[in-house]
Length: 194
Image 1 (cartoon, rainbow, N blue to C red):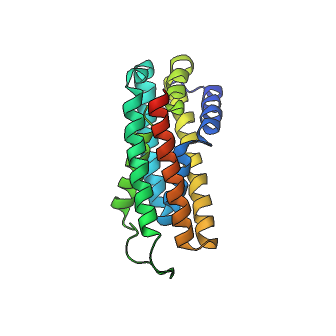
Image 2 (cartoon, rainbow, N blue to C red):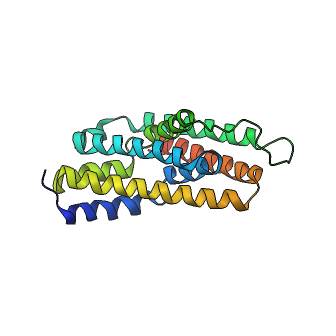
């Protein structure tokens, strides 16, 4: 294994900046306000690592996937997430935990993994990773890209936890639900305008 530090840093910088405004960052933030952040981070990180492995292995083949199907499935998942958050955000105004929060490792991990795994197919960061791997080396690109994606997820989860401690849970749920609904609508628009 030949590791090129410049390629690692190039991949990290490009992927980090591309992922910051990405929908999965906002999904991580929303999940982090309602679920255990560390469990969410394990789920999102695993999904990102799988995507990086696929991107560096398959390279240009990812561009052959039907983009509209990926975006439609992503829209449905974001729509489901919005429904769950908005439904949980209703009712009485006490902030006591009503038992609807997924707290166990496996449910939180699975939710976070699937949300990122499905929505990242054909994403700009995955395509960029594939392109970088073709020119800068597989291992160097994989390490830089995975570190960048995991860092953005950690930042989103820290922000989510910070917000959750200062804003009532029902307000956070409603805002998170509206953000997820916005992401679902955005993904649907991408299906019909692509």
